[in-house]
Picture 1: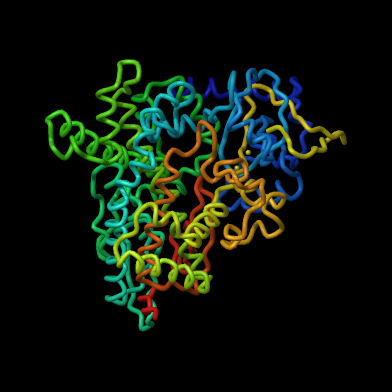
Picture 2 (picture 1 turned 180 degrees about the horizontal axis):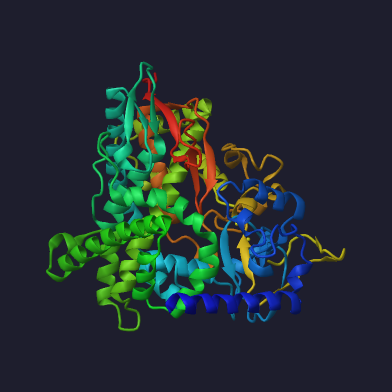
Length: 576
């Protein structure tokens, strides 16, 4: 009966959308864009595709800073990377949105739809994150989202981050010793996302191959564990398998990306119609192994967070000294919440959701960026050597002790390589236009009308690589651009030209945390190791986050590539 009802509702929805597509004109249809490959799914399978980089490059190359992409049954996505439009979408509040003219802009993948008085997160993505993490920062909007950010902001202040620097150094030093242990054992590492299938092979080379993504993922989890949750996940020893939470997150994005149609069409319907218990019952009985793998990953993450949350709450209520004095983010949040007014107080379900959300956000994207930066330095030995010298000189000036927040912030080349990597290391995603746009009918315009409920794709990748802002070498990794003086248009730290951390009311709350993590890990590792590239070919997949993959030529056809990033590591030679 339930399945029949769902099928009937889905058929009715398809009929409605199909009729609306043919009968109701949409001004967005005048925007330039590719001809849809399918009347049913449009270009959604190219738009959200692990190997869809060329599609995104073609959008920028052929259709410019604003274009129209067809989704299911002719619905529209407006893809934008124009700076002026992005400012209106992410920062400037627009008073009314029924038919809103906007200057042009956007593109790489942050989804934003228009609400009644501003732009808000796309409901499909809010629902997805709510199902996975609960009602946290990624799945709330409006007053509820602002209330949560207000409660969390003090935990991400610079003053508090300075107190966490010793924790960052401690965890990074554990990472350094773990890699040293692997080098001493002379083991090349070939990991999959299944820790039971990890294996090593001996090498006679002075350089040992390591999976830097595995190490950075484990380290990111331990960092957010200790500094964010007051909990240790990993000893970071070379022969210790990844924590199940780490394994689940590392494979989660890749697996979730295979459910595009289910998420865009089915999930919004069942989310509003059925209770969580009914949805869980349906998931359990469906003969769909891939869905069950996703369910098990979510269960692993949720159950781990519930255990940590309950232990933390019990400690605070019982007056435990560690809980009372804990400087981790969740302890601060829980204590602040207990002393907050009834109006500002968050329910336990939302506190738990913050724990899950922050752990995921702090781990997945940061670990990928850290690994990619080390991989990039491995292919740029001159810059790697210059950066190592800068770091060693800085430590020599303070008698070898760990660098403080301010001292790390004053290293120009370290700052440049981090900024340049963050600029280029993005997923593909995107309203007034800064340059005129030619429409399909041949006319030009400097504004576009965006109907209410239109989905906007914020072009993060295109924005950060826009040659009109960054110059003809915008696609090249050149840290020196940050040392020579940037164009005036690129100076705002969270402006629409540097969209790594988004901007406005939905800017990444932990962006300073992420940058600090990147700098401390890099400082610790480059002091101890030299990195060089391997002979393996690394590909990059768009799985909601950008992930490195390596294809195993011996694997059966149809096998997913391994999520890993191999580099060669050796002990750094002392510098005179």
